[in-house]
Length: 189
Image (cartoon, rainbow, N blue to C red):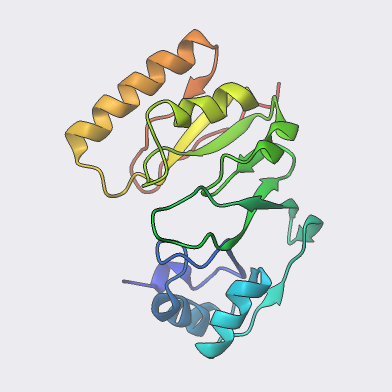
């Protein structure tokens, strides 16, 4: 992994200790280049300490981080076969972006009407009905898909088309994943 683009970061948030969210080898390289502060929960902090990385433990509630206001939410990871659920935290950023991470927890219903929902669309815990079900409950204005990196392009295209059609019926804009460097402007109207 080329870590040079990470030189200018000053904070890293680790939501839980699954390998697609925590890669201590690459994280060590990033912290070595950037000297960023790592924010996480107690369970991940212990793992980081074993890897020689320091972190700040965050608790449920509001916290300021640089120019951002974060709402930290302790949520349940969706069940996985033969796997213990890790401690995990979801985040609301500046009261306009909800990132549930790997959770469809009922606690997230509190954020109905949020401008942008970052929605995990593919994982061992998802189904084609559960994914839009979370967004249908939250009723965001816009949805940005994540957690789809292992899908073949033809399948991803089909999924995006299905979700776009579904969400349009509910007056929710669905963004197809773009290319690195693409941007999304969040409507706060």
